[in-house]
Length: 215
Image (cartoon, rainbow, N blue to C red; front, side, top):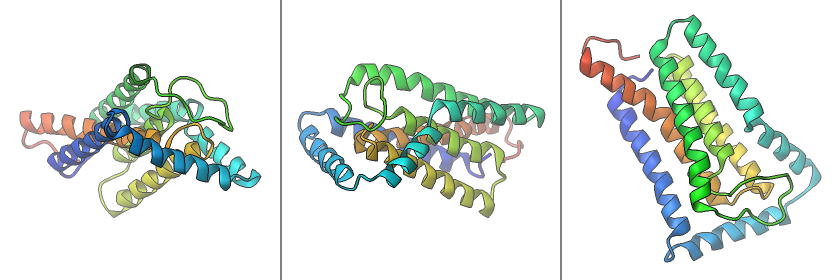
């Protein structure tokens, strides 16, 4: 899955640390007013640029990041990996998905951050972190890691996965379903888990069998 599992662990750790940092900035009394001021400014800008075509596109993008789309893609990927007998990749993807889903509910309940006012779509639960951003990052980044071969081609797919996750996350901000900081933390968390589990499993395998293939 990865050419260098140690580098993967380092990048994953940086992404997860970034998610934690954003969370601290959002909720620490010293920094919370500054972050909220930025979130408020972005929220106001979304209201200023609101128009029907953009709202329609944002709604579609939000749907693409929903459970109705993510879960069938995940199931299809796992079936394909099982058919190819890529058990390590299947295990890494499964762990990334399960750990991300376990994060969403408890963290939302613990933080209990209010949603932005004036949402253009129906929302449920607390605002932080963005479940859509987490799920989309785990699915998009994770699918590329477990299905594509290492090399320039996979790098291009990864860039596309990051771009799609970012655009989908911004659609949630535009729709006033989330604050900007919610989506940033969610995307970092999802990408970190998607990369971290393959890197960790490959590092463990290499420790037990140094001759094992690195991809």
